Amino acid sequence: MLGAAALIATGFAASTVFAAARDYKFVFVSAQPTGTGKTDVTVRLVHTADNKPVPDAVIFQTRADMGPEGMPTMAVPVTAGSAQQPGLYRFQAETSMAGTWALTLSAKVQGESETVTGVVNFPAAK
Image (cartoon, helix red, strand yellow):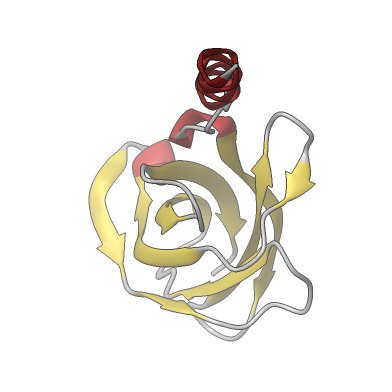
């Protein structure tokens, strides 16, 4: 009887599935100019299996550059802002010129051991 219980418990433990970093993605939501050379960018972090937003992730690394325009070394400062809804994350990039920019993000999701990384492209006006 104890052997059967141990076997069942082992089966339950073995069937537990943990998500990986590839099970999440950042999705572009909006980009709004907020003054000369500044753009507010809002992104959503979603769990790809159910397309639900992921609240309370800790975004610990950001980078904005003009890689989509062939200028990946043209990086600018990015400041985290506050978003109005769970799963949305807002940033202000000091976009010094008009064009398509790339926002690269690294985040920790509660309960996951891997770092989630992603890139979203956004338009910026001068």
